[in-house]
Image (cartoon, rainbow, N blue to C red):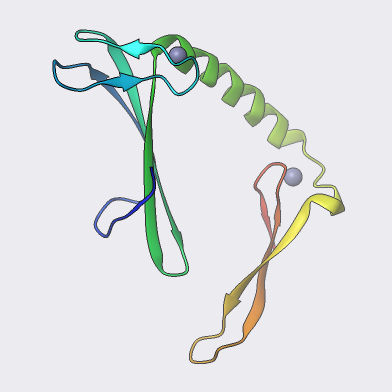
Length: 117
Ligand SMILES: [Zn+2]
Ligand SMILES: [Zn+2]
């Protein structure tokens, strides 16, 4: 779910929660239904684009969170070794203040997310 919000913190946030009575959640990875009393993790991402702030959140069960962490650790290892191949580099543009033209802002490696100037 993506919605416009104005006052949330930017970035991503993982929160450990215990399922209550009314809420019905499903793990986005394995579709496991999280029932009352289950521990689950709510992941919230907030990002900004074209001066609008977007946010979405999803729910992960503890089993999948564990897998996700392993994945992230592997990814972090990978990003340290990434050689930023040219074909994966994209240039990000930004508007010049007061004008309607864009200028190149920075180059980003889409493999590891590193910003290169
Ligand atoms: Zn799961
Ligand atoms: Zn890279």
